[in-house]
Image (cartoon, rainbow, N blue to C red; front, side, top):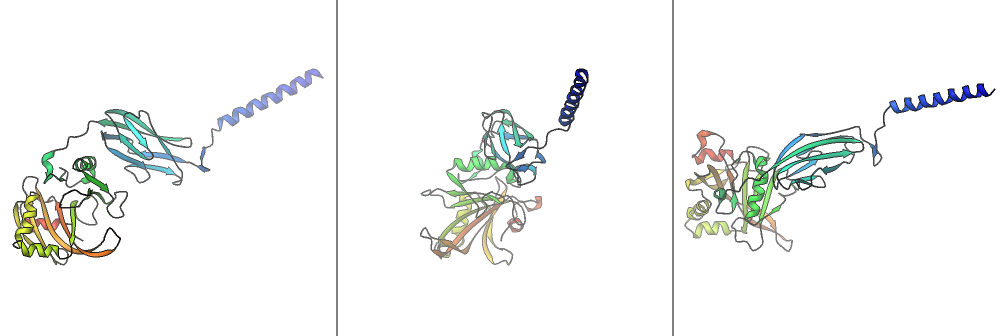
Amino acid sequence: MIIKMKKIFTLLSTVAVLGLLATSCKGKDPQPVNGVTVKSLSVAPTTLSLQVGESKTVKVGGDVKVSIEPSSASFTLVSSDKAVVSVMGKIIKAEKEGKATITVSAGDKKAKLEVEVAAARPIDETRFLANEMYIPEAMLDFKAEKDLIIRAMLSKKWIREPYGNDKEEKIAYRFAAAQGDQKFFRAVSYIHTPSGGGNYMLAQTLLDLGAWDKNIENKNSDAYGENILKIYGFTENIGRQKIGKEKDINAFVGYNPTLKIATALYHTEEMAKTPEGKEVKVDAVSMEIFRPQKKEQVGRASSLIMNLGLK
């Protein structure tokens, strides 16, 4: 009887062990995050080169794109070396030269981003207009020059602000003059994703209604507009031209031979809010700056203006 009971006990023990082994072979179920089971997680690109001071977003639709299923699942970022690449929320920033790995985690899923940080490019002081507005070398690709544009503009005491409702800078990088600053133009925008045409810069200031025409009339007509162009380095091919879709904007045009950029300076009547919140009509003076995209257009103001992304 005892022998029989031992056999039964041994048999049950064997079944239990086999059951445990079978269970362990099935693998672990995905670990839920806030009640959501993450099925997949990846980043693109998986390697990134940054310069000291440069920042990138790591998120769905970010500079580094995170693909996660389901898209509603949350994830975290951790740096292997915070002294080289720091993390704040979904933003990584290059702090000093070196290498670091950013681990993106959601539940039991992980993806890695290898980051190499190099020294920041120096700001070329010869590329400023009137020691105010920075002209990047890659005028046809502002996104590639984002970090340098930001550092250069901040060095001249500009303040970053959204371009209208574009808080995520999907359209432009915008800078405003500080209160009390004596700059003529009060805002500069680098339009990197225009609705049509190539990249261009837009410098703007607001004057009292009628002030533009009054200045033109009182300061020897064309001399006033031409003088503004010359202050900002546009010394060649200066003239007047009708621009815009309806050719209804009378602009001053010019060319900067040193930086090989062209401009159109014009004014329109716009609505603006006073500090008290009251809406008033004002003269909006704008200067659009861009690089010609065709060799035959260089130095020919009448052809250059065709590249402007006017509204």
